[in-house]
Length: 94
Length: 207
Image (cartoon, helix red, strand yellow):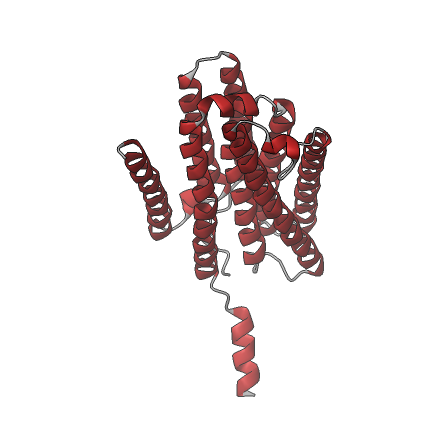
C-alpha cells in the first residue's frame, strides 16, 4: 500500500510540541513585563523565531520530508532575510 | 474498456509528493505577502518608535495571548487529525478537525470583540479620531488593521477548508489512502498560526 514508508507522527509528539510552544508563549509574555527596553524587541522576535521553526519542523512535518523540500524552505527564508537586510542597509545609509 | 482502465488508474494515482510541493510553493507566496507588511512595520517602527510604543499600549495583551493559545492548540489538533487519518481512525480525525474549526471560531469571536471595542472609541480606519493622532500612531493602527484583517481573512478561508474536510472525511473521500486534501489544508492552517506567532509579539507585546 502507498501508506507504507510514510512517517506517521505520534499523538504524544504533537502534545509535547504544543507544551513547548505554550511555554515559549508564556516566556514571551513574561519577558515583556521585565521592561528590558530595546532588548525586549530582539528577545520577543528570537522567541517567535524559535516557535515558528518548531511549528515548521514538527507540525508541518518538514523534519520527515525530502531534502529537496527542506532546502527549498530554507532558501525562501534566506531570501526573505536578505530582503530585510538590504532594505535596512538602504534605509540607514540613505 | 481502455478509457475506463485509464480513468481507474487516474483516480488511483495521486502524487501526494507533488501535491504537497505545490502547496508549499503557494505558502511561499503567502509568506512574502505578509513579509512585505512586516517590512513596512519594521521600517516605520524604526522611524516612529515612540508613537508605536504609545499606540501598542492600547491593545489588549490578554485577548492577544488568548488568541495565541487558541491558534497553537488548533495547530496541534489539525496535525493530530492527519495522524488519525493515517492510522485509519476516521472518527477521531473528524472530531479533531471539528475541534480545530471551533477554536478558529473562538479566535474570530475574540477578534470581533476586540475590533468592536476599538470602533466604540472611534479607532477605525478613516475615523476623525484616528486622523488626528500623531503620524506614527496613525501608521501603527493602519498596520494593525491591515495585518490582523488580512490574517483574519486567512482564518476565515482556513475555516472553509476545514469544513470541506469535515464533509470529505464524513463521506470517506478523504481516507487512509487519500488524505492529501487534509494534509494541505493542515499546512495552510499552520501558516495562519505561523503568521500570528509573529503578529502577536510585534503588535501586542512590544510596547
